[in-house]
Image (cartoon, rainbow, N blue to C red):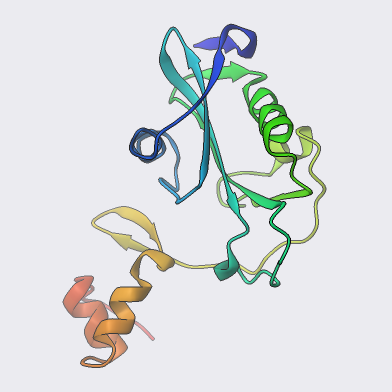
Length: 173
């Protein structure tokens, strides 16, 4: 289904609605974001773009300027294309929040980053590959598990944690 962005209206999206939409429509699922902008067509959320202050766990240099943001997620509802949607949402964000800088990433396993080029972003560098856990057939980012691992690390070694909490049986090192 194709919908022109001109036929949509921009609204702020509450966290729980954003979480549900991202979990259902974005390969990486939900992310904590302070700004969640949605495109609505006939009162239905059809596209979502989220922003946050720069996240430090991603090996970023300490940024003291509050005008630097990260575009953390963008997606449209499955099987829908919102023509001009990403551009409309980004322009709205810029006009409302007046950021000094916006940074973002694309996961090279699932995207070539063309969306960001089309939106006017500049390519800076390619990051080292990260790793993910596959839990019950669902790909989950390692950051989702770091607190649990740190807590249990006092009682168990890493292999015991993988076997006990992640149900890994065949572990090769």
